[in-house]
Image (cartoon, rainbow, N blue to C red; front, side, top):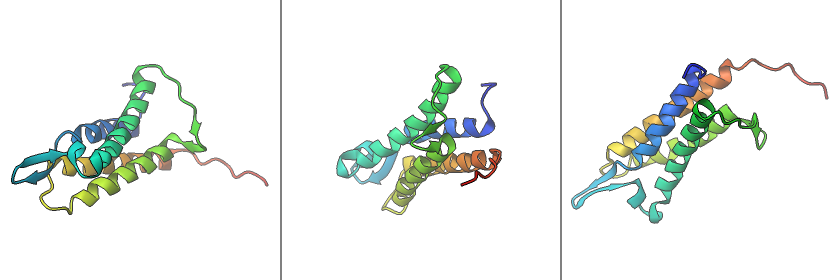
Length: 136
């Protein structure tokens, strides 16, 4: 963990918590509770959120602990930009579920974890040195 920046640790923990939140109750019903995998659309919302959390935590963890080298840019975007985009998508899904009837603790943890991912990505992009403008 010595080679990780604080923003990467935040994103790593946020991604792991986001993934784990999909297994916690998202909705409380009179018949019990349902997690993200049991929601409408055959659990696609839960699948999207789980994949986003796993991709962010897995990517950072693989680089830090597994010695994996990922390209600096993927589809023209740097890692903090990708984390920001995915984290904001997860935030929209989970925070939108907060306003449904009887949201559970999984929804709460989900949008908090995705907000941490968004915040860490913003901090990481802001801390990056600005490159000089290029000539046309």
